[in-house]
Image 1 (tube, rainbow, N blue to C red):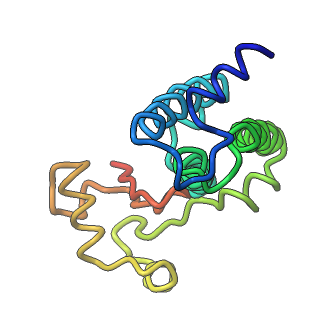
Image 2 (cartoon, rainbow, N blue to C red; image 1 turned 30 degrees about the horizontal axis):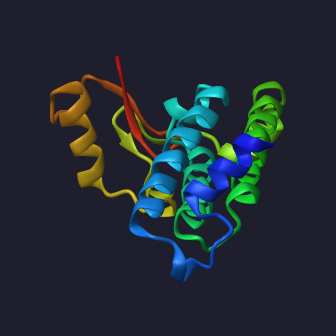
Length: 167
């Protein structure tokens, strides 16, 4: 416990927020940065490698929670525990979605075909607020063409990105 007591004194975790000095606030930011980096690194790789709604939400929440430890809005040590709990929950939900397709569809969504064999699926495009210009932009970006003829399909992926499938 001596290390925790020393660290608490150095970081000013027991002080009222208005008594925390600039050096203590800077040290808190460094500790939170390193802790969050390690916590996420010990979480699933998926947390770092994807940009699905599921992953973006957890990153926003972790950022929000951890900022409170830096600025003293929440108790320092319990905030670190909350971060670990969030990453553990994310890992559990990742495990569930990787083994149960119905859960994956409910949480992550599923891909939507916006164009197939030269035909635009206007209903899906309207439903997801995708314009014809968005499709042409994806064509130029991924297929290096503005022509629909060499394209088999354009898909709105569950993570919101457009992908182009060539014939």
